[in-house]
Amino acid sequence: MNDPRIEQYAKLLVETCVDVQPGWQVLVGGSALARPLLEEVSRAVARRGAYAMLRVNLSGSGINVPWALEAPVELLEQPPEIDAYMWKHADALVSIEAPENTRELTGLPVERLTTIQAGLRPHLERVLSMDLKWVGCQYPTPALAQEAEMSLAAFTDFLYGACLLDWDAERERMKRYAERFEAAEEVRIVTDDTDVRLSIAGRPMEVDAGGANMPGGEFFTSPVEDSAEGEIVFGEFPAVYAGREVRGIRLRFEGGKVVDASAEANEEFLLEQLDLDEGARFLGELGIGCNPGITRHMKNTLFDEKIDGTVHLALGNGLPDVGGKNVSQLHWDIVKEMRSEGSRIELDGQTVQESGSWRL
Image (cartoon, rainbow, N blue to C red; front, top):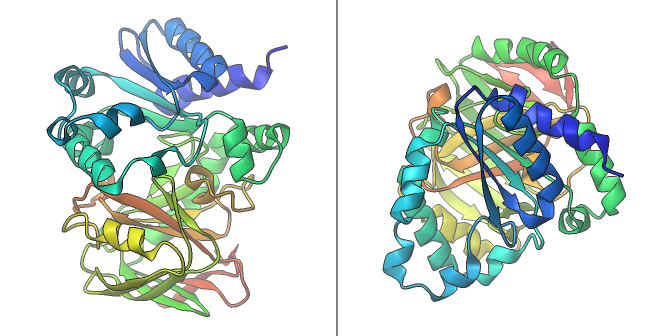
């Protein structure tokens, strides 16, 4: 029997997150493991009078790893013309992550992966600016469940519990917090091992409540690029990026730039990412997690950055929609626990959240 939540999920993605319009050309991508959701999304797009253009991949990584391992480097430096045309002319994108193996990309040498990412970067401007309406989401697979140390049934319930919320109500709740941030000039994040200050003066806050990410449940902005000062330790949770897991990240900022960095595990990969380009050592995002259905870390950034009572900083590319100017092929969200005793977020010197609880 089909799970009725799949149809609800597809309707949310197509009608609320992307708001597909008649005649649109909608890219619908994901691995073959996501077939039930790919089919429901296609039906939902059809009911909106639009085209659903399926892009099904094998492993769920979004990169054809066997090809990328063998192809001449010059082919990795830019996508084929047919893909470039697709990115330029599509009206919307529904991207469904359903990996067979969450570590698939570790089989691709870092230099080849970064070459592909650099080649794609110019073609993603429409995504970053939201000119191309898009939503990224996940479909429950055994690999995602294993990563979260859950059974597939438990992970499936967890996913739908975090996604199928009353997003109108969630938007109103988060909007109240976001407005307080918009009225401030400086954010300070303090824990027993962290003290970092960021300017958000003149930067609007975007509330994610059924938008480009599903699950939603955060509000975010791009900090002023040269403003970060201090040190932050991401010691509570591992940071996962491109299939690699980095533990115990410590970053020290001066004038907005990471001037010193270390990690307890996989430090070499961290430093490689920081040296990708000139923008990789600057911050592209400050986000505040607020999803009431997400209370634990799962080594799954799409969920982890929304944990209620956390913050996350993204190294690299800024978000033009909220005034971000930093340019990089990197955008790496790293989550910081703020529910521990004494942890706090200050706005212009006033504590607005303490130990994960709001004081607003």
